[in-house]
Length: 207
Picture 1 (cartoon, rainbow, N blue to C red):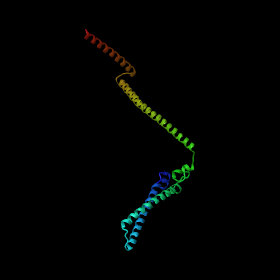
Picture 2 (picture 1 turned 90 degrees about the vertical axis):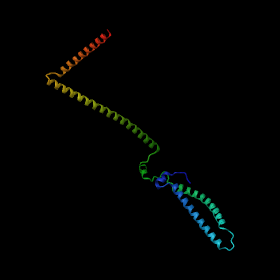
Picture 3 (picture 1 turned 60 degrees about the vertical axis):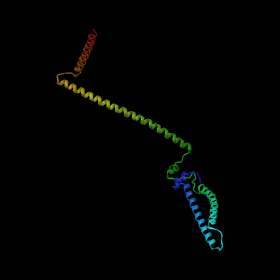
Picture 4 (picture 1 turned 45 degrees about the vertical axis):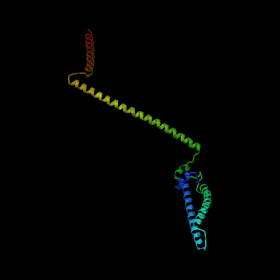
């Protein structure tokens, strides 16, 4: 049996050619066996009609099996030649013949191996460019997300300052900024006093 897969022909016909040839081989072999069985029955019947025949059915069976082996050997040899003839000259599709639907674009727009190689290189370059642009886009989206978060926090801070300024006005403070500066200065003074008290406390403990 042939070892050439002939994948293009298999796509076109819808079945593998090796499977087709195998089924033909099995069909011929089965027919040969049936013919030999019929011949054996005819021989036994003819021998049964001969008076004083000393040939037994066992001998007829052995002779039939021997002849069947002889015929099968010749059949295998002939079928091998027939298979090569079918696969190489009858069922094989020439490489310059395009029959599948997906081959239509290639048939309408043929290109050489060099052109095909250049197209592959261009596709690879476009893929790399797409990956680079996609990475840049993801980085920009991440930065935009961070900017939105910072903008929301800034807005909250401005709202807080507005609320504090309104509260200052309600309690008679004319300028919120001056009050904030005064508050910061007092906080620093309190921090200084606290540090001084802590140092004096540590010194008294040492004494």
